[in-house]
Image (cartoon, each protein chain N blue to C red):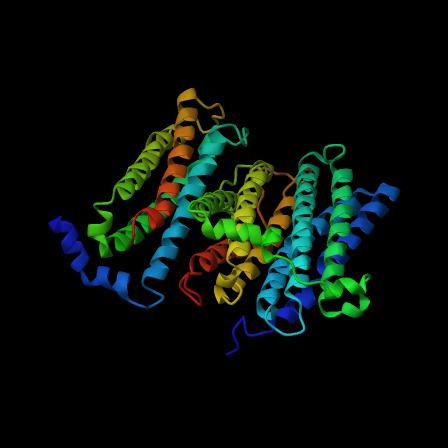
Length: 159
Length: 321
């Protein structure tokens, strides 16, 4: 709790949360949404491929997905922390927010085994294992859950 | 500096409002001549026009709603007549969007297999006729708003206004505003749809920019229907927001920019659908796009980000929600 209070007292956190400037909360929030589009969109393209959309594309051609995911993750980690810090005591203790964090971590976690599966296999491999398909379904569901939780935060937690 | 919202919105509607009817006639003309002459390229042109009309009908409808909001309290203009017109236009909008959707499927299949599923192009043609009929009714009712002298039934002009709640648009608005879940649920779907569309456009445009060079363009083209699925979800939920609370949008500069970039992004989506250069017999192994096509891919990705920016900035620039 002391950490949350300290976060809230940081000048940058206060600026993001309270400045009327369009570069403060509006821009940070918009970047967070753009990061979401890149991160989830790229991740879903790999999931669709693993589930059979575009069967002829070799799995090894999906290296770009992980670079795009990295960009999205970094943007959203930075903007997410900035958005969190200004209301750290509110978000840090709100159950729906913790659910969102859990879902984000779960979604990102599906990408680790998929990364080694896609990038370290045979460069011409087109068949998909049952386990990779399950991970793809888990990824789609978890990202959908994370977006839903994130969107509903605005309604469930008075901020 | 004049703002994007500083022009007269009723004039914009008067400028745009002939697009759905005249456009449907043009598309139908092309399709009918194509059927008679058995001319495949002409058929595709008819379908392309139909998709473009479906895209342009969005700002036509929205500018009409905006004009209604601006004019509804002016003496001499019947609020009831505008609402009757607006409901008819909503029917026309729905059918036009459906016609554009079927036309798009036919275009996408034609690019992949050389021809669309039998029956699909006739279905698009019938839908275009239906859209023309329903839009013509909306157009007639729209003309009646300021031209009571040309009304078929002059007596109806003096009828007392009915209950405004009887209109479909009003009913949608009541649900969107009063239901505790309708707005949040639509927003959630809007964000999911955004991610899906953006993911598809990212993959296709990155291929044009030279990423995944080993992958034939036809393989990323396979993803486009998923992009349209996301876009369709966002069209429906976006319209629910707009009809639900039009006053949050009609004066908002980011919303106008959002629509401008949506038209650019939509035109690009059509271009990617019918894109010919990367297909056989052109060798599609490690196919490299021209500089112009790469520039177009950059414009496309920029436009989608601008659409997203305009939407996300709505509560902050111009109007507070």
